Length: 183
Ligand SMILES: Cc1cc2nc3c(=O)[nH]c(=O)nc-3n(C[C@H](O)[C@H](O)[C@H](O)COP(=O)(O)O)c2cc1C
Image (tube, rainbow, N blue to C red; front, top):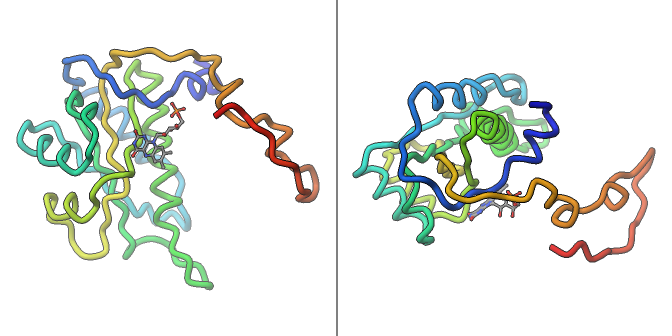
């Protein structure tokens, strides 16, 4: 599939079939995450793959939404602030690097016929406690991954995303009046 088609096919899926994802496919998704770029190639990430029933239940308890119950696998993507590149002005790049690796994984999953959803609105401290994370390592997102039990309209971006002329600035930033995009 062409890259733009994979990017448009990916969507936040919140319904999954009652079917586990094969380890072979999970490894392909994780490999896509592994090769992601990061600031100064620090790779400040860890992927905790959870399929065990008991741990899954505990992790699902960190997110207050019923739909997560259908997930048979959740990748807890952790950022290691101790490892991440720190710019001279003090900005630590963990979140940027972790977002890139997650994007690689969600797109790879799409390419393999799987679906995912970013989850950041979870109880971070509870999750870190369940996973006994060391100081400096933060769970940044929960990524449920599974076989989709829902569908999306691949043309939805026409109305759900801002048009290029609203976000692209050629040569210099110029003020653009707010336009309603229907989101
Ligand atoms: C950083 C980030 C955090 C998100 N957190 C959540 C979340 O906690 N719960 C949820 O249901 N969706 C979450 N989402 C999914 C977004 O709501 C979704 O990506 C957005 O509405 C666009 O829809 P789409 O992914 O289907 O294209 C998150 C997405 C991103 C990128």
